[in-house]
Length: 120
Image (tube, rainbow, N blue to C red):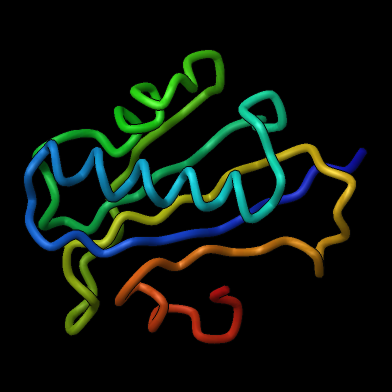
């Protein structure tokens, strides 16, 4: 079994805790489903949020999905002029038998424009 990393992002419509939970939950669920993963396959997850998001911690959405024994951390993205607003990104470290090329990175909605080269 190999250690791999999977990326993902989602753009929020508004900076509201409930909306963040919904969208980040959808992102994390899609990452797990598209890569045939369970919570037991997760090693850790880094979440970042653009500076305009401050209503809640993105990691709170993972806890609400029942991911309670995986190390999670939140950080702020750097403020780059012209960058897409209201974006939560994740970088999950996983254990999987999939080769690196077989990892499905997940960019939902408008966030797909962030990484057209790897978005699924």
